[in-house]
Image (cartoon, rainbow, N blue to C red; front, side, top):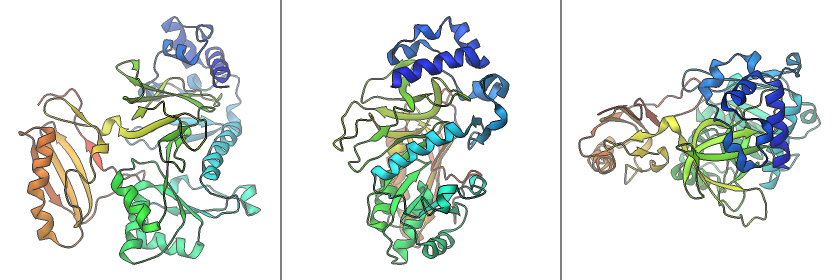
Amino acid sequence: MQTKRMRAVLKHAYENVPFYHKKFRSAGVRPSDIKTVEDLCKVPLTTKSEVQAASLDDLIATNINSKQCTRRLTSGSTGIPLTVVVNSRVVDFENALWLRAYFENGMKPWHKMVRIADPHNFPSAPRLYQRFGLMRTKYISIFDDSQTQFSAIEEYKPDVIRGYTTSIESLAQYCKDNAINMTPLIFTSAELLDQKARSTINSAFRTELFDLYVSVEFGLIAWECKEHLGYHINADGLILEFVQNGEVTAPGESGEVVCTNLFNNVMPLIRYCIGDVAVASDQQCLCGISLPLMRIVEGRTGDYLIALNGRKIPPIVFFPFPFDDVSDIRQFKIVQEQRDRLLILIVAKSNLDRVEKTFERAERNLKSVFGENMHVAFRIVEKIDRDPTGKLRKIVSNVKMDSPV
């Protein structure tokens, strides 16, 4: 099925999408040259900057009625958002993929869901099936504080909560601090899930959360099942490659995630570099689902820090590192301001004296990874702000990978 859909998408893009017709011709590749998924590497990679620079007329298929389409904007965390165009056929297929992940993990059609999300993306009206009591959803702003969010949740009494990882982690901490008992089904998405966040959420809600790997461009890419051995890739909807230095990586090796959409004929994206780094897997899941697995998502390529010797440090290694004890730390954020300078922002719980005593050990831990000449500064703040999209970036690098010391 995947091969058949791939060949159809390549032919469609070559014949109807000016952007990909030019790209194929420049590379001397024709759709007939791509007979298997392994042959896909003959097609050049597509970067986000290429798509951002192209006009929508070049990206949208000429045989599609654009008046019947809708536009989406990616979060634009780099400052430049990306427009993705879809029609009702694409939306229906995406919804089917979402339902599969929900239902496999215990959600029922009559369950009520709360979505903690960016208010700019709230739907204007409920869908028809929701009016009949199916998949009812209440939307709560990610910019509200935890107390406000909890008040809305307490009133609605949902069976399921889905939201950004950091938002649900904050809500979980609020419930723990106030001895509140809730046991909803939890789905996290949109941000890197580290072990600290997973532990906090699971213990607060006495559950096993399910993490979802999502992007605006491709919808639901992969999802955890009850075995938690990795993320099941929606291989009937896309082809996922993991690429390092232009080569597809072997299982167990990390690489940049490269996606090819198999169902969006409006604006196909072929071998598109999504900007994440993850680990390929050849394991078979014990749950019996035959969809292939990928391992952990290590983070955004732009959120990798760099040691003084040039080694790339993935964001997944942090939290609780560099701290040995985070009992007095509510939240922290690491910013690499320059190649040889790290700034750690700290939101303390209450005991500032004890927090400050941990700085020396944390500095030694960081220098053991980044190099002894790395300058490390700590700053206690009242709050770490979210970016305009609602995401809370725990790791930020202002340094290019090839910048000198």
